[in-house]
Length: 356
Image (cartoon, rainbow, N blue to C red; front, top):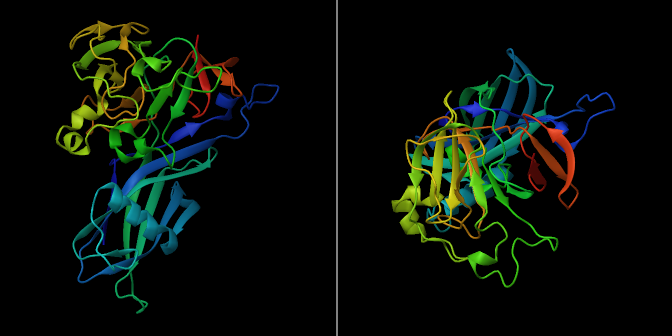
């Protein structure tokens, strides 16, 4: 049994309670956690079929085991079925849950877990167990050891908009961003009104949405390496044809800009409004410079801004990086009241964030 992960590197994202204001009177951080996320691919070479029996992730620090996570067969079987449905792979009628065929590549997307920030985890060992012949007791084990990388961001990045925006989507266990390697640390942003809605009126026109047409800014200085315009807005609630996106993967991002900040750090800002881009490929931009306006192009159900940091200029190929923003305040509670000033922090999903 052979294992591999996607993306090929595992980056650890350290989240401190500072981003939620959880510090003591002396300003010391109380606790915190580190998050790990990747997709796992299992190849069963045969002979015959096998049934997934369990997945273990062993956490190590300097060679010593410091923790362990286990997913039993009862969790792997529905996970496998959901993954096949997501990839539009027809499941064989009558096949027992968790069974894989000879030569099949089993894709288990969105493996995500959190551990205390105090653990200096530098290596993961993945173990997948399968029954070669169900009921026989014969267990086959596949193993893969993966080093953990701790990314140290070189670019100082600001939030790419003005005013209070809601962090509507991130990259935890349930996030669709986890399914694509350049987006594994991505965020989605919207604007929300006092009524808690992202739109006014009926919400059946893009113009009804509070973030539509808002200026989108360069998060940091750099050079524009990709600038896509000309894709029309999607009507709210209507997604692009999946077949078209499968044949034109770049269209997933809609109108978008990719900026090279240097140090192999690239920002992607996606779903921009057609005809509003103010930059071209090769342009030098500064932090806070207007790139275009928020729209609803590409794989988008309503107007919003998608942002991710990645280690290369090519969407779908470059690994995603855990981005940290500076110079912002956190909205407290369900409104955009300003909290403490934050520097060099990730963003908490389900909160307002306000650049300063």
